[in-house]
Structure formats: C-alpha cells, structure tokens
Length: 442
Image (tube, rainbow, N blue to C red):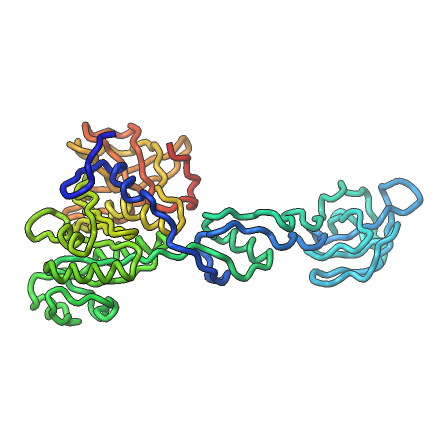
C-alpha cells in the first residue's frame, strides 16, 4: 500500500482514507427502548430467551388429539370416542386415556395423555366417534414445548439489525424492551453564499441562519430577486441517506462563504453531534473554506484528496473522538463521497455492518469512455440466472439527475472502457440483507 502522511494536501486511495476514518471508531452508546420502537435498530447485547417457545405442547393442525389406541386389535382402523373439544387459548380439562380423543384446533394446547394428532381430513367422524384408518407418524402434527426456542438459549447476537422476523421473535418471547445502540447524531451543513433554504423550512435549521442573512420568500420570483441562488438540495439528499443508515440528523442550515461564521457553527456542531458532514467549499480555491474552517474549529486535518472520480476533493478532520467530513458541493459527487466514506463512519458509530457489499457483475452495456483514474459510475444492478448483471445509467448534463434509479456504483479502475459482457466490480448501495440474495464480499 502506498503510504501518505495525514494532513493538509494529503492524498489517499479510497481504502486508505476509509481506514483512517474508521480507526478506533466505536458505537456511540446504548439505550433501552420499547419493542414497538425497535424496527431497524441494532442490538447492543445478545438476547437470551427468558422462556421456552412454544410455552406448551400444541397442535399444528385442526384435527383430533388421540390417546393411546384402544386395547383390542392393532394400531390401524381404530375407533376413538370423543371426550372433549379444545380451542386455541383454552386450558384442556381432560386427560386422554386409551381409545379416547379430543377435537382440537391449530395452536391449541394438547390435553394430557396425547400421543399423536391426526388432521381432520385424514380421519372420519361419526357423531361422537372418530375412525382413524392409520395413525400418522408420531409427532408430525404436534409441537413439543420448547421445540423452537429453549429457555436460556441465545437467540439473537449483538449487532443484529432488528427486522420484522427479529421483532416477531422478541414479541413471541414476551420481551417488551430491548437494548440497542444509540443512533449516532449526524450534524449536516451546506456551505455556499448561493444557497437558500426551501420555502417554509427556514425555522427547521436550529443553529444556522440563511446564507448571506436574507429572508426567504415563498414566491419563486421573489427568491430570484435575491440574486443567483439555488435551493439547498444537498442537505435533503444527505439527510435521507444518513437517516437510512441509522443516524439522527441535526440540521445546521446553509452557511455563507465566511470563515468566522463557519468556524463558530462547526464548533457548536461538534458539541451536539457525533459526526459533522458538510458539502461545498472543499475544492481548494481561495473561496473554498472547509479545510480552514475545520482547523479553526479545532480539527486536525487527516486528508484533503481521495484518488477517485467523482468526489476527489474530500476534507477529513478529527477533533478528539469527533470526525468532520467536508464533501464536494456537486450533488452526484457529494453522494458518491457519502456512500463510500461517510456512510461507513455513520454505520460504525451505530454498531452496524460497516462496508457495503461489493462483488463482480457482468456489464449489459458498454462504459461510455476510458477513465484516467479510478472512477465510480452510477448503475443499476440485479441478480440474473447466471450471476449478477449491471447496467451503467445514462449520463445527463449537469449531474443533478445522475443517480436517479441507481442502486449500485461500478468501481472502474483507470484504463480502457470495458464493453458489454465484460466483468466489473460493483458496490451495492442498498443495505445488506435486502430482498436480493447478496453474494459474499470478495
């Protein structure tokens, strides 16, 4: 691995930069929450079953619980006398003896003395008699107490993401509260005097103010009268991405291209949040203030360049146990840098699996042109009959719609453009454990 020294003007590969950011990162803490609030959260400690499941022996079908066969004759063609009916949720007050049976419903507790259960369609009922042509194999249509989960068994490991199945299991075990990792607090800011907040949402950015100090009109023509401004779209894109990765987003608002304003805002942000994400001001010109603002806020610069396109200019700094990441202002570049650098940080702070799934896939269309350095291309990937396939998304002018429909990035090394049918490396943007059967990282 090529070595580089952390600091101003330090250039790293993606893997080197990510290693620097993740070094020493730990989940931000633990909290006990109600089960109804747990979907999507990450277990902070293993779950040990407090009781068995099912808690009692039960029937798997609607049918008849049978006692021992009648004394006379063999096991087949037997006639049983019905002595009770057992509904789900009731306590059977009967003990089955030889030649007796109870009508039973799915999920109902088995009466004492039950040796097997036969489905209704495999037996014949004549009044209070049940004719059993042949006894089913023992236990096929019944469940013993604790057959699924034994009391004291470790059923979920720490680090498990709580999806519908996990939530259902916890509820079945009677657990009403669970200990999870605290959601990391991500403070989001956008720098640039050209930015304005969306109409009606200015008050939703505590700690920040409108870039340049102007009031925002709800009328588009009046917004235009303020000068050449654009809406603060990067905040909303990154807030959506960070929320999906488990963060609690704290908006800082758009900041003007004024060093003192940014330094003061970032100092306060680091007191409230676990990680600071900014967009804009990372390009290196005299009007790009992110590196200076991070330093002024007490941060030690880790790197200023990642050798990839888009997203080459990324400013990273550390202040104590807090990370500061300055992403590009260009929307698609900001998202690429987020997925590859910021998302692993947020996921690590929340106790989640850190790195995205990466694997080979076959191109269904040619890449448009060669790249002089490593590039990441927006794409759509899907599992085919013989393996994963991937199609690069069409290039659009300006890039604001570049990522629409993407669920993956093609990791393209410097060199000639690969054609249709060639194998490329894919970075999947959706979380692990999605509806797709994801291959192992290799």
